[in-house]
Image (cartoon, rainbow, N blue to C red):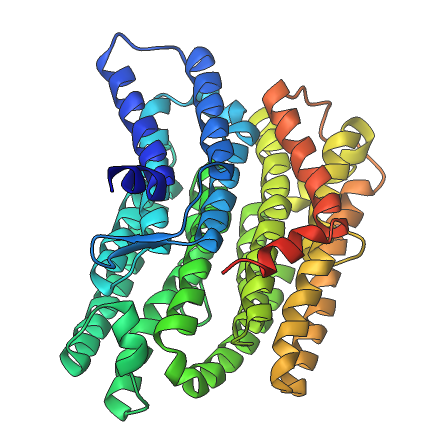
Length: 466
């Protein structure tokens, strides 16, 4: 029984061990960032690789915690993302005054996401959600020299508190109506009664805040702009990915009996989210705000796959988040390198980037091509699978709107690509010397953006998981 505990909770325990080791480092005399950062990177790599061994399906604590092969893959995707963040933003981490504390907070949030993915009832789900949210609010304000960072943290805290209150009200209604908080029991008890639908809508609204679904997206751009780039990348990729994973579980397993209701809700919100994200992204000059609205539009596409309510829908969402991880982190990695060396964050300031920095230019171009869904990048296959899964419900006008939004997104991504490849002038970004870890991270992202789409077994492997 004890062996089952260590094997089933292997990924959570490994993250906890890393957190305690970092706390011990802070209790000691201290280690310079140049020494500590490589140690953290090796630890995160080992943590990611551990996800490939000794995996087992099972339940613990009377159904409060469960794990499946699919849950392990979802956690491994998040682990990979955190490892890449430690590589890509090494410039910022080396200058960070409290590096150990930063990773303690970020890994605490990751730990909460792991428990959220494996939660078997509403109580554990809520506690895990709070564990994954509160540390993020702290790291948003980690750059104390920036006024925008404090403002972003305040907006993050207020929006999170508001969404948590709505979620708790929804949970209380669900428990009051059904008398249960266990996911397995709720999947049988929940019906189409008006009061249960109302409780579900409150529950759904909390997810809409976390995923930045329109009209619950207003905090996103300001928080992304005010946060350090590493935190923005974490919010955009890791946090959204984790919430999307549990969103699938809640809709497909717990509230499947309400699929008629949530399907129409998803369709309406998906259309509004894609259109709003695309239209606002066109207007942005600050790159972090640009990627913020771009990520809102990408969430709209994720909802297309979620609406399928099928194995194909689940597979397409998990696959797309893997692709999105490489694409978005590649773009953020390039912007972080430029910002760390030149202080430039605006798209208009990147004119002629190719002249002195061809490697950074091509990585950014590949990432944007993937986000736009242009073949042969993995983003094309990711969006193709999402739309194909969504089309299984035969709601073709919905699919047509999604396809038209892909064309709109292509326009603003190509504007950025045109800017970085345009003729250089005196204000062009000078040659940037990259740290080896940053270059490695960018190479991994660029290669994965191409190979993940061409290697069909990746999608097939995810589809075979349960």
